[in-house]
Each structure stands twice: as structure tokens, then as C-alpha cells.
Length: 324
Image 1 (tube, rainbow, N blue to C red):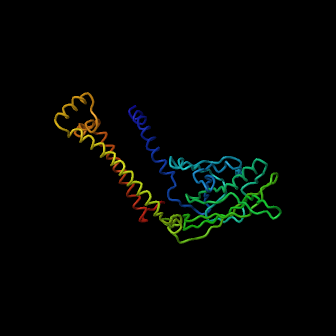
Image 2: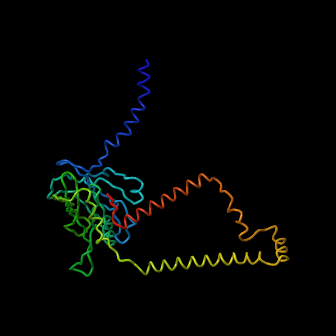
Image 3: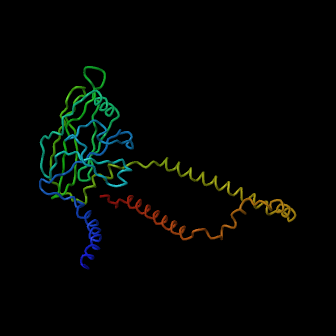
């Protein structure tokens, strides 16, 4: 009987331990793949190139799904949601170290509504974002090309995606996407959406695979000295303005209390029912605040966060911060 009770009581403990261990066992953090193991290509979002903050789900445009369903979603947390990311499994057949000369994604049937959506996206220079093994790929939906038969430009949609993947041993190091085979958008036509995959070996280590995205010459920008000077002068001006107002107020208070004794008595009798100026706060200097423990905790935590942000900024400036 006692052994039965012990077993029953130990069930919640076993379940709790299993709950803690199951994410660790199922979480693929090493990014390692075996020969011909499936590699997922996640589609993320689309949006206008000139306004990166305006993004939509990739399938908000009438791209066809490989198998006709929505696929599985991948949620990375609150930061991903705030960044507008919504990863969906493209269900494109990718296997580690297995080249694909020409694979068919789907048959895209165009009607008037789909053609209008694609044309609006092309006119606004819509771009999209994919992910393979947490590495991003970018591309444009299509482009405007001059029409030889008229003065207007025609809208073309890229129908072939060529993916190049570099690997080192059993880990993916670099991914690249180029688009080919542009086709004009015409209602009533059927476009065959295809892809190809090329795997190649590289000697770049896994720890250095994000260096290409953090290339300093690529992201280098000239320092806007005029903007910095303008902001600096604005701060000085506002500081001087606040200081002038404060000193003028204090000077008036000092002048009022520095009069002759008779004037001081009359002034005190006149203002006995109402305190003004610095007298309103002079007693607060040595008065202990309410909830001192909570205030101390908040101030201490704020100081730690401020120091942490400062250190991260300094590390990013000197180039020692690695985002992997």
C-alpha cells in the first residue's frame, strides 16, 4: 500500500522533470544535419522595399502553396512577433548535400485578382524574406521591364528560384538566392513556379557564418557631423533655457525674502496662508520617500540596465559583439 502511494505521489515529480527535459532533448541547437536529411525552407514576410516597417505575411500575395495547405508555423518568441516575423514551412523538398537541378513548387493559375495583386506589389518594389537554418535570404517579387511594343512598362514575375548553399562538414554556413525566368503577368495563364538547389563545400567555420551579414564595409555609413552638431546645439540651447527660467524664479524668491525687516514681516503676514517658490519643496530635501525599499530596487535595476545597454553599445562599436 505504501509503495502504491509513493508511486502515485512521484508521478507529478516525474511529469515535471519530463516537461523540463523534453524541450532540451527536442531542441535542435547544434544545426547539424546528416546526409540527405530534410532541411526546411521557411517563408517569412513581404513588403515594400522603401518602407521596411510595412510587412505582411508571405502568403498575403497569391503565391501557391506546394501542397495546397498552410504548412506548419514557427514562432520564435515575443521579439519575432514584434519584428513582424511569421515563419511558415514552404514544404519545398530540400535535403542536405543533395542538388536539385529543377524542382516544381506548384502551378500558379493567374486570374484578374491575382494579376492585380502582383502588379501592385511589383510597382511598390515588394521584397520577400526566406530562412534556411536561421540564415536569411532576400529577393524581389518581380520587376518592371520596358515593353518594346508600347511606351508602357510590363510587369514580370520571377518564376524560378536558384538557391546556393555552402556547408562545412555537417553544418550549413552560407545561403544565397538568385531569381530567374521572369514571366509576364497575364490573366488566364498558368505559370510553373520552379526552384533549383546547389550545394558546395566551404572551409568557413560555423562560428563565422554570420560575418558576411556583419561585413563592416557593406554597412559603413558616413558620419553626419552636421546632424550631430545640430543636436548638440539644440541640447545646449534647451539646457540654457531651462537654467535661465530656474535662475529667474529663484532670483525673484531670494529678492523677496532679502528685503528689509518691515517688508519681510508684511510679506510673511501676507503670504502666511500660501507658500510659493522654493518654500514648497524645501522640506522635501530631508524627508524620506515612501516605499524606500521599492524605490531603491527600481533605481538599482535601472542603473544595471543602463550600464548593460552602455556596455552592449560599446562592444558593438569596437566590433567584438557577435550575433549568432
